[in-house]
Image 1 (tube, rainbow, N blue to C red):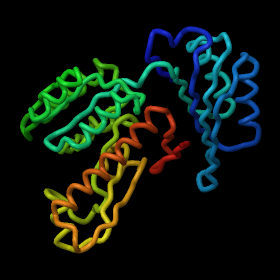
Image 2 (cartoon, rainbow, N blue to C red; image 1 turned 45 degrees about the vertical axis):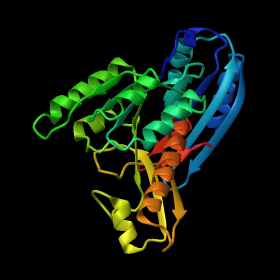
Image 3 (cartoon, helix red, strand yellow; image 1 turned 180 degrees about the vertical axis):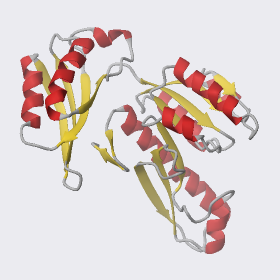
Image 4 (tube, rainbow, N blue to C red; image 1 turned 90 degrees about the vertical axis):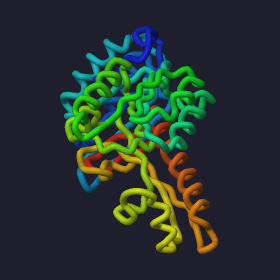
Length: 293
């Protein structure tokens, strides 16, 4: 149920993040805080949410101290979880989240994520870049990240996705970022990556589908453009939304300006989604998300 990102994760005294959801009822917070107190842990950050529509309770707790190891805490939490029908995850915080990035021929999101990562702004560890084109192999090399060119065709899509998934699993990726990866993932791969793959696209959908959406938007004289980051599901572009943002535009914006401003918005929205996911701030709530910022 938990994740172990580094060699220090099994040592006592490590900082952890516990996230969970369960049916709402009295005593949940008391039980969790009491559980941690009994083990000498100190709560450093806590946030909770009661969804009155579904009757579910969500919580994120960052804590430190205590002498229990990750494995011991997982076992003991599993016992606590039974009485509350609790779905939980426990993460050690010291190591960055292993990440694989998929991209095609638009490099603005890829470049932005790599820069933020190397600047220490994202708590991720980019293990590999996978692309169906060779355009960004030099960019990958400049960051010392392995670059895998895997062409995708209708006839060989299954084989290409099998190779992609092999790399993702070999790198231990807890996050897969579709940084303007212009291929539709199969239902099978979507299911395999459930809850750990984030996609970015312009948020004018379902309008302006297909190629050159900002050209289409310019022709229609839109006044607002935006971007949406969401988890990948078999329902194309309809997964639980993590983040959105908009930028106002007007008649004076050329199609080039519109495109540039749209790409900037996409980069910012994707970066926020990656940050929150890597810090275990996002909990999936059916078709929606709960985000403890």
